[in-house]
Every structure is written in C-alpha cells, then in structure tokens.
Image (cartoon, rainbow, N blue to C red; front, side):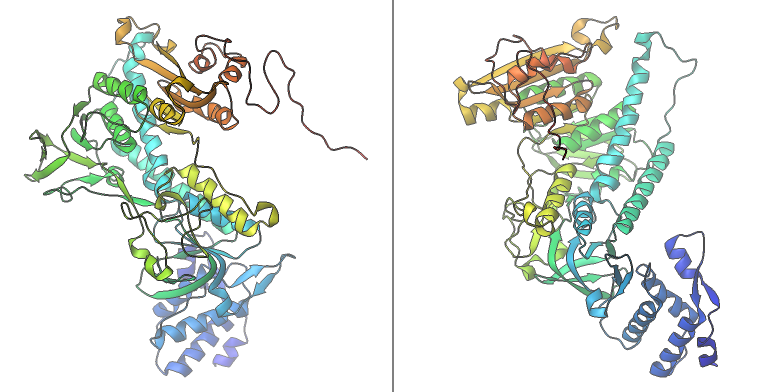
Length: 605
C-alpha cells in the first residue's frame, strides 16, 4: 500500500506549512514524500506517528525549502524525525541549497547545511546590513535572532520613537495654531490607543520587509538563542528548547544593547524601561522620567507634549552633559518653558513604592514625588552579551561596561570573531552599525580592493529628537580647546527666534530660540564642530555633516550662497561673513567665484 502511494504524485495540502509562511495558497506536497517518510518512521520506530507530530516537524523544515530539490527536502525530513524520535541532539540543517552562478539549485549535505562562510548573531540593522552585503559576494550567510527582525531601532527605538515624536510635534502645532489665526469649534482630542495600534502595525510591516530583504538576499534566518561553544561554533536553542549547532569561517556579534535598571527598593518592580514605553496602553496622567541622556529627554518631551504631567529626574544639574554647553543649556531652558518639572542634583532614585494604584518616588536627596502613574527608567543601557558565552570564544570585554573589545577593523581578540554596534560601545547609533557592518563584509569578502576597508568613528553626525530637536557633529567647544589650545580655536555663534515664531504676538524673550555654534581650529579655520538646537535642526544637519567630513573651512561655508529664508542659512552667514582666511578644505576650490568642478568622463575610443 505504501509503495503504491509512493509511486503517485497527487498533491496534498499541508496546512501547517501554509500557516507558517502566511501564504494565501496552500503548499502542496507529493504523496510520495509523505508516504515514504511515514514508511521509514514506522520501520525505524515501530510505533504509530500522529499527523500532528509529522506536521510540526515538517513545518520546522519549511523555512528552508524554497528552491530546494524534492529529494533534499525529503532527506532532511528523515534526518529530523530520526533525531527527534531517537532522543539525539540535533544538528539542524538550516541551509539546504544555494544558487549556483547559472541560477540552478545546488544540493548540499547535512554537514554543508550547518556550516556557513559568515554567521551573524543578531538581526538588528547592523547585523542584517552586514549579512546582506556579504551575500552579494556570493557567500553562504546566516543570521541568528531570537526576537523580531530589525533589532532595537525598528522595534523599540529610533523608528517607533520618531512616530511618537511626530505625534508630539502635531500636538505642539495645534497649540501654536492660534498664532496663525486658526481656531477649533471643539477641543482637539488625542487617542493614544489609535496611535499605538497604527504604530505597531507599521512596525510589523517593517518586520515583514526585513524578512523579505533577507529572503531576497538569500540569507538564511535561524530563530533562537545563540551561544558560543568554540570560536567558530555556535549553538542555537529554538523556542522549543531544542539545540542545534552551526559552524562558520567568520562570526559576527551584533546583538546590540538593552536598558538597565538602577538599584533601589522597588525600582525594578514599579518602573518600566524605554522598551516598556512602547507597550503602554494609555497615556499616563503623571509620569516621572529618570535619566539625563538622549532617550530620557526625548521621551520626556513626547509625554509632556501629548499631555502628561511630566517630571525629569537628574542625578546632577542638567541633562545631556556630554553635549556642548550651548546645547544642554538651551534645551534646559526650553524644557522648563514647556512645563517639564526638573529635579536636579538628586543623585538618582532611592526607592519606589506603590499602593496598587499610583506610585511614590523617593529620591536620594530626600525629595518625594507622589501620585505617579508611570515611572520610566532611562538611566542607561548595557551590551546584550550575557547569553553568548563569550569566554568559550576567547572574546575579551572591557571591565567597566562589559562591552566587547574591538580594533578599528571590528576584530575582537579572537581571530575570525567580529563585533559591531552597541556591543562595542563606540558610537551607539544605528547608521554607524550599518556602515561598520557593510565595511566589514567588504573587507572579508570583497577581494583585494577592500582589504583595508573600515569606517571612521570621527565626525559622526547625530540628532536628538527632543523638543526642540538637536543636531550635532564633531568636537564640543571644551573638547576643541583641550585638543588644539585656546588660542587656536575660534567660535562663531548665533541665537535667534525662528521665523515660524515671527507673527506671534508675545514678548520676544518668550519666543523659543534657535541656537547655533560653529567651532573652527587652526590658521585655516577648519570646521571641527557644529551644533544646533531649534526648529528644523534634525533635517539640516546631514548636509553640513558631508561638508565637515570633506574638510570644510569657515571660508568654504561662507562661499555657499544662503537659502533664504531658512534657519540653515545662518550657518553660511555667521558674522563676520567672508573675512576668514581664503583657504579651502576642498579638493577643487569653491572660493572666490571658482568654476564648478567637472566629472571625469571615460575617454571614447
């Protein structure tokens, strides 16, 4: 009977595979595969096999059977069933075939299927960018991830944060509209749940786009928790607790970081992290944000603008202490004007208590904040490395923060093991991790022309989505003076009310201000620092970042004609305009009416 069925080729609908792939069409499996599998299992186990266990095990294979030959898929099903039913530790073949240069499928053995040219731990933006770049060089690549694709940035960081910042900005515009003659017959209402649902659907769509990008790049996705068993061997435990082992010529650690809670009675039990902010089902009436970094000021600004009674708890005098003083001082003034209550020099939170409805926050300096709905801890982050078993790979960590030690080429202390992004603690920004990951893949797999490829961690532009936003690149004034000496540094400043606030019939001192600073060094007045806070700061910084990376001088800035009326024009008209030494940092000078540079064109034969 089994041999007869095995000879047939009628399709059968396999519902579990259909469900896993979220397809609109069921996947059809020939009877020959089903019956042959059942026959082998019956002969080896001599016991009945439930349809449920068969479907479950076959579904675990389904993520890898795209473009795989029928015989390879059948053999894989046999291997997994035999291993599972005989109680063996599985070595899961996650990659059944690759595409040859002529486009046809190439079958692989089970051993081949568990070995990769490049194995990336962490499917955040940096890890996925590196994996996909490596795949463009024809390498066999896999990414291990236990959570949602996209990492912190996509799921609980930059992207959903910007959505909330946009909502807060709209709230501010509604508040401002009376200055432009607009009124509403009824008070505008804000629906937190509506926004949360829309935001979450958007993030889910991005998760799907990431998955599609991985599939299109032919990068294998392995779901589970990874840990090293040796420098080139990684064990992955899936959601069912079953281990599988993979090996690779090169392993990249790109697991990112996670929010930490400070010590104190009831702190962990009665507070949420920045991750928890995105799980809130309603806007809290009263909220306490603890922290002085960019995450704290961003979320405090969002909550305050949307209507929460917001307090910001600082250990010391002000937030963003690592930024230029002009930035941190101006932000402090604006937050106070907006109604945020700032608790200064508290030395942090001592304890948090709860009566089941509201919370009471006790600060180290004796201050007490009562009737609090939500306490949000944004006091720092740590590298997500505890579960990796780094000692088995011989990878060293820095003693103070636990970040992974790397050199300029993203190499750890172990040959063949690399690390990028927040786990290294250098410049903890998503675009920095993406650039580092791509350059690493170029150097490893791109051939001789990329043998020295690396990224620079200097002059990295960054934006803080506070209210108002901040843009900064390069050295602060204090850093420039320390590096070059007081007499070799020249500072250009400007502070003004943006034209947006021009029609407002309020005292000039009460209008929000934009503040700018250009820091120049040396005889040529090379621009070594640029800082801005105010309306539009987030969108103007990128272009100035390019100029600084190319070595622009104050004279180069002055040579660019202003776009009027904009806030950005202030940077190319800073007083005194046009009187700096006429030296350029450009390869082709733009000074004194010089002609435009021309592209090099191929010589026609």
